Image 1 (cartoon, rainbow, N blue to C red):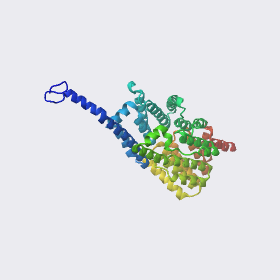
Image 2 (cartoon, rainbow, N blue to C red):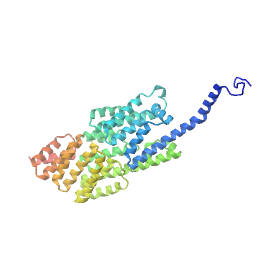
Image 3 (cartoon, rainbow, N blue to C red):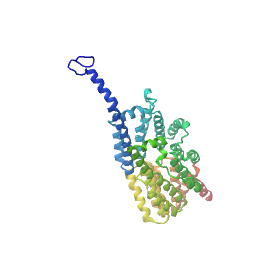
Image 4 (tube, one colour):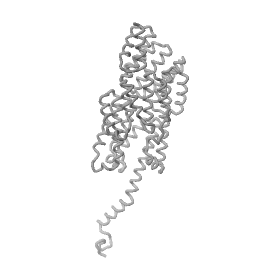
Length: 430
């Protein structure tokens, strides 16, 4: 038999064999391969959440490095051409939380560059995810630059973010936090209060509002800002996206892992914020109650752990419980040995200085506050540190040193309760 399709031995011509193979690949093999790769993204997302829940930071870093070298073709293609910059943005935020700001900034810049250089031929594919990724990368850059004290650059990044987010009405907690860092408390409050309860940023914004009102000495408003229900996983997905994820086993497992992760962050963070207000009010009984609630679910995140230990130590010290306070101060110090993030170092020394002041261990308080002063970066940190150094010198009978530091606090433009109290002390001595 010799036809256009078969040779004389009845064998299909090679080019037809190739076409048949391509057809089989396109119809049966590639769709199955694609589905397997997409499911692997869900399993990978669940793994990321599990590592975070366990506090396995080395494992989480290895996760990002491994994902950047994925051998799954559809995953690689999706990240490189359809939503470029997504993985780099997540990696940048992880590095930021670890206190590795310069590395984090490099990843954020890489994410922005890759996102903006998305090939025109793919622009119409995953356009919403591409847009969301760019917003996230700009927000990460704002957060990182603010954390580095590069405020003008942070504002420029925030302005670009706001330009993108303007039509969506989204708020930016990184800009509100930046205003707080700079001591612009009223501006930070205005920005943070613009968040709506349904926004994924709402919890963070409520924390900023409470923090600013606590600094201002308006404790009623600070507590009121924290009267909300902590966010659940539903805030981070559209209804359609949530339904789609719930319909597959891998998606349902990812949602459950993310729900567990959020439960170890948002509810305890609210209680820790409440404790901060109560410690400032010196209502240590209520501070203890809030911290007892936080302890039930607080996760391994270094920032949460250090803040929890800080307010525990101050609350115990305020009640004269020196042994218990020292226990939590030691826990703080152990954390910052593992995570020598500048802000955590400052918080540890500053918190220890305040605790020792409550315990009337003035020399120890001065030593810790002097160490805190060497770690300050943001104006609001310097403001608070100078105030408590003034109080420590006053308690030690070093009147000239106390006045010097009270003058520094009173001269700051930060509208805080500390500034008002420093001015009152100076006025009384004239």
